[in-house]
Length: 428
Image (cartoon, rainbow, N blue to C red; front, side, top):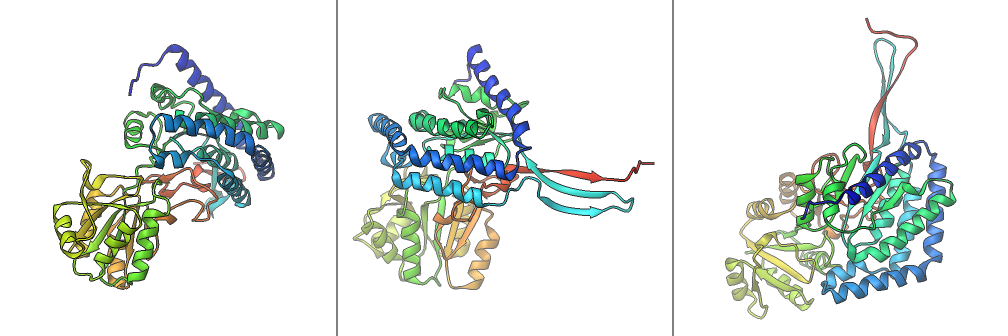
C-alpha cells in the first residue's frame, strides 16, 4: 500500500478527525431519549428513501460487475427492499437496547468513607475501515450514536454511491434533531493511501476497527498508532465427531457452508472422522448442493475410496488457510478429536468453530481446547452475528483478545471510568 499522502489529503483527514473529536464531547452528554430520537428519525428516512437507496446501489452493483468482482462480493453489496427492511430492523433493535452510557458496572464503599463507582463511558471517536457491505454504514453509525461515540467511516470504492447516500440520510437525521452531522462522517475519498494517514491520527481517534481482506487488516495492525480491534478473516471449521447424529450433522454442515457462503461466519473447512460411517454422505451432500470440495492428498485418497462419485480437487496455494467466501470448501479427514483440534489450531483464524457430537467428553474437550471468538456445539457457525446474539447489530466480529471478542456490539463501544464521591476526605 502506497504510504505517500499529499498535504491536501493530510489536512482532509485531520479536519474529519478534529470535527469528530469535537462532536464526541457533545455526544457523551446526550440523553438516551435524544439518541433514540435520532435513530427513529433515521428509520423514517431509510423507509421513505428506498428508491434513492436502490438507485445508488444499482450504480455500485453495475460498476462492481464491470470491474469483475466475484458474485460473492457483489452479494455483499446488494441493497434491496429486504435488506433495507433489515437495516431498519437492526436500528430499531438498537433503539430497544438499554443505553450503556452511565451504567454502574460495580461500586463499593472504602474504609475511609469514599464511595467508588465503576461507570461506563463512550470510547470517544471510532474509525472503521471496511469493504463492500454498505449495511455497515448504518449499523456502525447507529451503534456509535447509541453508545455516545462519533464515528468515522471509511468504506471501499465498490460501495461508494450506496455509502454516500446512507451517510447523507444519517446526517439529515442528526441535523433534524439538532445534533452536529459530524457525529457520523464518511470519507468520500477512497484512495487506499489515505488509510496510512488515518491510522496515525492518535490524538483525535480512540479506536480503529479494520474489516476486510487479510492484506488490509495486516497493514492496519502493523502501521496504526491507534489501538486496533481487528476483525480478521473467517476460516471457520465444522468438525463432525464419531458420536454425531447424521441428520443433524448434514443440516448443520450445509447451513454453515451454503446458507450464505460469502460471509465471514460461513464454514470454510469440514473436518470428518475417517471411521464415522456417514462421512461419505457428508461429501455427497456438499457436492449435491453445488459445493466444490478440496483436500490434501491424504484426504483426496480417502475420498476416492469411500465416495468415488464425488470429485475432490487439490487445495489452492493457500491450503487450509483459505477463506473461500464462495461455494467451495476444504475437507480434512482425521482419525480422532485430537487431530481435529490440532488442525484448527494450526489453520484457524480464531473466528468460529463448531462441533457436532453427542459425546459429552468430546464436547468438553473441544470447547476447552479452542480459544476462537465463538465455539458452537451442535449448531451452525452462521450464528456468530450481533443480530443473532441479540446485540441489535455489530461493528464486526472481533478475532483478537482485547478488549472484545466475537460480535462487537453496543457495550463494546464503551470503556469505563471511576467516579469517587467523598465528604471532604483528604489523603494523609
